[in-house]
Amino acid sequence: MFNRVFLIVLDSLGIGSTDDAYKYNDEGANTLLHTIGDKYNLDVLEKLGLTKLIGKEEENTRGLYMRCNPQNTMKDSLNGHYEMMGAIMDKPYDLFPDGFPLELISKIQHAINREVIGNVKSDGIEIINDLAEMHIKTGAIIVYTSCDSVLQVAAHEDIISIDELYDICKTIRKVIDEEGYRIARVIARPFTGKAGDYQRTSKRKDFALDPPINVLDLLDRNKVNTITIGKISDMFNNKSINIKIKTTNNIDTMMKLIDFAKGNFSGLLFANFNDFDSLYGHRRDRDGYLKALEEFNYYLPIFIKNLKKDDLIIITSDHGCDPTFKGSDHTREMLPILIYSPIFKKGKMLNDRNTLADIGATILDNFNIKNNLGIGNSIFDELRKG
Image (cartoon, rainbow, N blue to C red; front, side, top):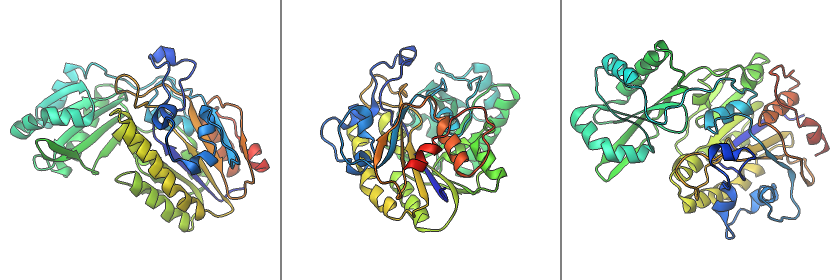
């Protein structure tokens, strides 16, 4: 029915705590509601039904909109995106909230012939500010983790070149796998600057495990084009992706999204807007989060104006990260699903969905591909009603 499907992830835009949020100490979290408050300009997203999902009234909506309960247990980007693509892991990847085992760190130091400093759970900018001077003096790499299954390696570009940092991360990936740890991603985090003004650069690179079989694999097997923008390719380890586009920030992501809308392709375009999470959610910057949402809303009409009649957009999220909540971790929340095409005449709120995998099931249904992943119910019949 639709020649092009644009799946857009507003990273961390939760819309209220789930029934099981108590298991995560996240009761009361609501990223969208607490970010926008009563003064905001999200007129286009309002018309797509976003704010109705948190109880705000809006007339003359367009498209379909609904809330969704995530089924994965990890409330992180990797598992959120996996679930959208019809993959929920029975055994989640390993987490290290107290830092990595000293035995593993020792083996890493021996393999790369450099010392490791840090080895804690931390925000990236914070640990860089704390340890950059020691790193610069000694050449030791800064290692840290987060609420995700990641081992992140920070290094100043003047001390360790980009190529060497990537080689270090490849070696660490090999050590981790040989030692039997299930860590989803090793992430190179280069930075520049000087004391008081350190900045991470856009040369980040992920060294990930292969994902479980998912919608991208089924699309690729059936010769349906798959394009990713942002960090999507890293999370899926570049598997079953035909075109991979890297971006530097949300604005860059939107500009590339608009360029593709203006162009001619068929298949799935899968894009992630990461700044909401990394720059504002984790750092508990409510004002920055709201500004970024309004910025996305400002450019959204330009993107929509360039859609064709046989285009479909799906806007969703992967987890919550309430900038007004305690701590700095992700929050366990319900997630929005907004579906729009230029051929839709009116708006309709659908019942809550039980898994993000319904998105992947709908995409497969659209391209007439059998869903043998064992999860997800297509919304395609509702799309026909438009």
